[in-house]
Length: 253
Image 1 (cartoon, helix red, strand yellow):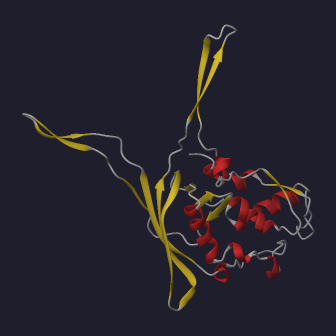
Image 2 (tube, rainbow, N blue to C red):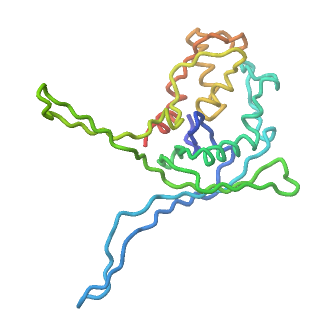
């Protein structure tokens, strides 16, 4: 795996990566300190816990054809354009991902590799536009704010035969990753009818080029042949080297 900066967004049961990285990443955390006047001392600054962190980025989503890989080898199952899952790369796909999270009031997990950034966040503002002469590309600005898990407290009371309370247990009820749609990358995947390795890599890891690692690992272990055969019903291994930069980072806070 190369040490490149990748922006992973996990939410609503999917993982996406930005096709074009932003030139600047602005992270801000406002203080909540309070100033007071103290007799015979003057103005003082009372230190308080800082507020939630926020992040702003801007870039663009290029038309799918403009980022179609050109280095596919002869073992690839992607020799035919018919196998290309175009809607996964159209600008509207990315727009839908962020607008849906905002409309459905769901957080996401943002991971920026090589910057050691991993955080649950919520979409605060998402704007996009098309430019004259570049109508197939969508330019966007995205503002995110830190999201902290919270929930009610469940109290369980245990009593003895006489009705006397013997134990009180408190459990914090917070949303799980599964409930929030935060994806963790599995070590195995059963292939559905018509599903291609590129699609599997794209959906599970957020990066379609990871198909190379999946393909070579399963060929080496004899799970599949050339990769050109019908893979429906096969259980593919998602090797550790493919998962480490995505799954391990996405699954931790």
